[in-house]
Length: 256
Length: 329
Image 1: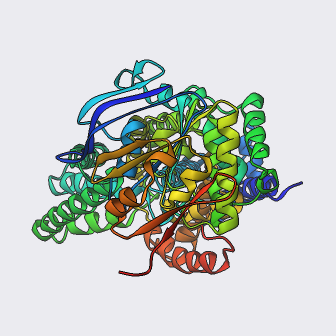
Image 2 (image 1 turned 180 degrees about the vertical axis):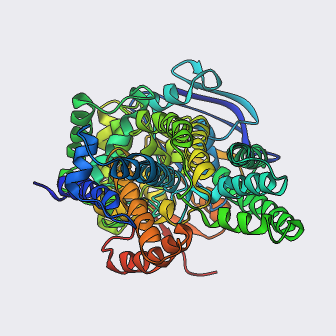
């Protein structure tokens, strides 16, 4: 699905990260963990082709991303950015319909099929009741789901979510993670970032630990999310506790 | 009937009513019956026919075309710059046109050349801003454009100031001042015959791109991730809006506020979807400028410059709209 090989990424004239390699199978969930400023968003934007890569190879379904047009990329990858507020007052229905643009010609207007697909992606996230509300007037959690619905309307093979749980309350965080698992079960590959290592335990098959722009560890969450790796990334001491039933959770220590 | 259809209907009705009124009132009052007779080709007194076809006709049409063009360009720019306080002048088209016209007057050229200079000046100013702005990499492309527009606009403004300072205070300066305040009084059918097709040429891409325009209102990264070549689309919209504005300004001079106020009012009525917004903004823009111009020639014994009146009406109206709005924008 997605293959990244010895990638160096960053902004023009400033490399943020290098030597990043990983791959993602169809239906696989990968969680990227790392401190603020560690390069998670920049990595995602590079994978999406929004920033030119500095070095290395990004392959999407065995095609180099450099050879794909914007709309060819958008038909393969859906992007859920960290929610913005500076939108015009479009309705959620209009907003989600924008996800169809990669499937439409330059001068086309969405047709019945596009509207149906948008409705379906709203329903799959249980937010059909928001369709006529304005994106400027719904809550942050609802807007996050509207962004996911818009990305699903792209009918992508891969969904890239940049901190989809940031600024959500506990219940909405869990709901977003549940939906991530459900989407992966339907065959979509998922790449998401989070500030909470527990999220990787909850729904990712693999975790990628990104610190100072380099891959610290990559592998099954249970194998790579350890006291030593977390301490190295975040600079605080953490216990990784096994729970009854085979789950794990992270408990920070308050002693310095 | 929903409130959206009602908005279109009321705007269209207001436009028709104002057009009839604009033909009727003035120093030589004409009855609605007489206007209809002229339009239907029936026999009326030659005086009436001259006033309707030669005097008021071109002027009314000019107000409709210029008002609709400025409102359409403003609608496109407000969507594209994601800001309801943007007017069609933001990339310097009016300042460029003003410099062209002022230079034409300063060189004592005839009217045709002054208009040509204004049109070319508008296009050249935006071309320059776009050329420089798109080469300032490493910044948000929209911010780079706006800042370049402001800076170049200031530069052109100072050249205009210099020309005004050097101009002959008895022959040239009044003409310059008159042009800078805008006027629809002297527009001939020939002027319209050139300006209207150019404005339509600018309108065509806006109509064709009416749905895709909405994606430009998203942050750049999001629009691109949805498959939009934002740079190409932006270039097209800037070119279209500039062509419309330059064509309008070249015949009317600078008339502010229409391109700022009208799109904002239309958005409050029908929401931000460009396909719904554009026709309503054009109807309202045409009606607003026609109303203003009719007031300009009937309020006093001398003509009031429309640029002054749009500001006098526009400022309180804008504040009222803003206070009234239940949603942000």
